[in-house]
Image 1 (cartoon, rainbow, N blue to C red):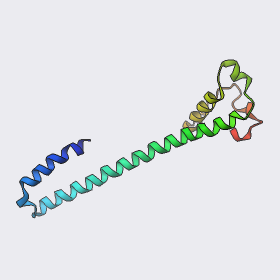
Image 2 (tube, one colour):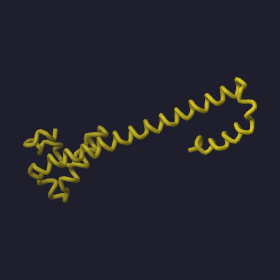
Image 3 (cartoon, one colour):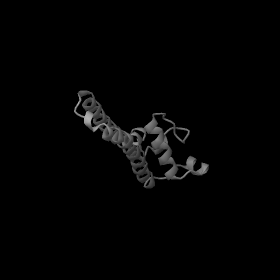
Image 4 (cartoon, one colour):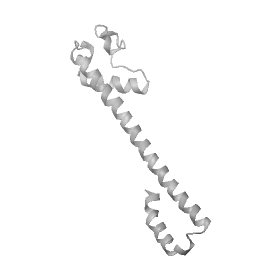
Length: 119
């Protein structure tokens, strides 16, 4: 944002010194500006890739795990606590992605022994 806000002012300065454009110093400044634009554009692309990667991993993981849990028998411990398969899938996905290994049941995922896809 800061660089983009400086761009119109830079263009005004360059127009006011058009007769100096042929000097090596001004050419160097122009090449630095164009490389700066490329860097900003590259950073934007990388930021979007990271956001999409995180979104796809978390939402995709939740969806796959929810579908698996949807067709398995609900765990009584979680039903007694009032958790649905959607919440279990969301919590397990975030826990697995962050590497904490925390589960919502007292015996980890052992109650899902009939559904090996959960592991």
